[in-house]
Length: 269
Image 1 (cartoon, one colour):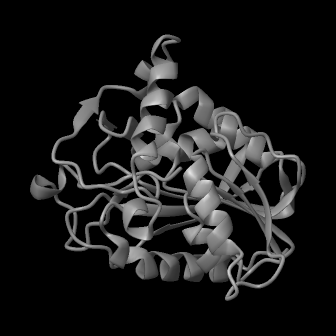
Image 2 (tube, helix red, strand yellow):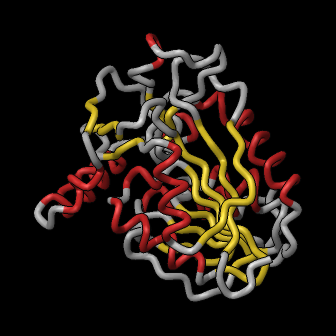
């Protein structure tokens, strides 16, 4: 499941430079007219709130077209810019293994098809929405794609997903805003345990430009400050080895950051 690309409610009056980047929670991005700040994402820990938080998001994305434009909320034209930024980021990481990668929150397979499949022998996908997962299978097995490069497609939410393989790269983009804080940290821990020695876990997410969490009631997601992701990754046993801001996105959107991590445990070099 992708996250929405949303406008930044702070941008018009903050001191960000002229290259403001989008708030992307997943690949299903829609510009919202209104955002609500939440004092803390801990509000999402309430047992009665959590099921509604996930159910609302699932319902929202079930009504979004299974197209690149649908995934990117009408901003399909930024797809090439996004992929180029991610490709440069991975190239500079020099990922040691090339056998197996995992795409978390894969949507219709946009990132798998254009970024991961050209780099890895096999790519597994995790996508909650059944229609998106089926479209991803179609896109990633078309004649223009390397034969047998698509691995497993896991049709479930990240809050439920536990990998059964060890990956050379795990890539998670515009989806983590759909996880509560406890589920986010638990997800990070499971991903750390699912990496090959020396492998990378990478996230690419919208971040808020203040220290506040921004709540989006329409697609049931939150946009966290960059510092929150850094803190939760370290809490889950990762060390951050590279952090880069995506460039050349349209103005007026939330900043997007790419973060590469390695396990600080079990000898992750």
